[in-house]
Amino acid sequence: MRIKLTINKKKRVYEGAPFKRLIDVLRENYELTGTKEGCGEGECGACTVLVDGDPVNSCLIPVAQMNGRRIETVESLGTPKSLHRLQESFLREGGAQCGICTPGMLMSAWAWISRGGSARPSEIRRALAGNLCRCTGYQHIVNSVIKIIKERKRESRTK
Image 1 (cartoon, one colour):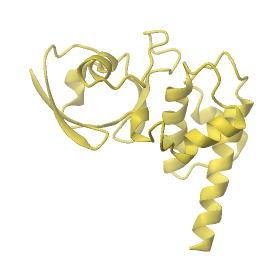
Image 2 (cartoon, rainbow, N blue to C red; image 1 turned 90 degrees about the vertical axis):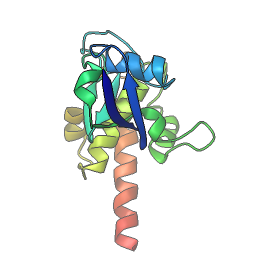
Image 3 (cartoon, one colour; image 1 turned 45 degrees about the vertical axis):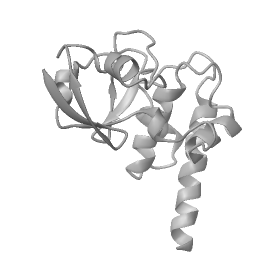
Image 4 (cartoon, rainbow, N blue to C red; image 1 turned 30 degrees about the vertical axis):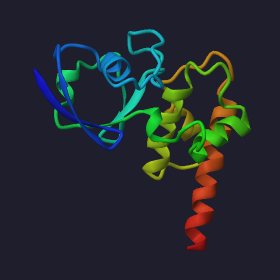
């Protein structure tokens, strides 16, 4: 089966098993290994990517459902030499610890921020509810997101 998709702003054509999981296609076919598999059951959120701007568990989606869709992985945010400011915030605020949940948290947080989500901790927690972290207790992650939302608001007022 021939599936046309856009991954991190690059047009791609996947030819292979239509029921191969999206996470496996990203990691194995396109070497985008930032997306992590945690549970493989859609419970932990470690494999979260954005599909047309919406956070989804890539371990649950067959690639056949991605025809014509736009996919963003954690690699779309930044590189080790040039981190996205959300990634920098996670580092500064202690939102990234062991690293397993971090790519999924970043993508869910970025979806929230990109949509103009508020800096209210309870709303951020709700936006990140599909992502589990066993290290941080979440407050450092929430603080990381709040910091970026507030920075963006300050910048928009000065423009």
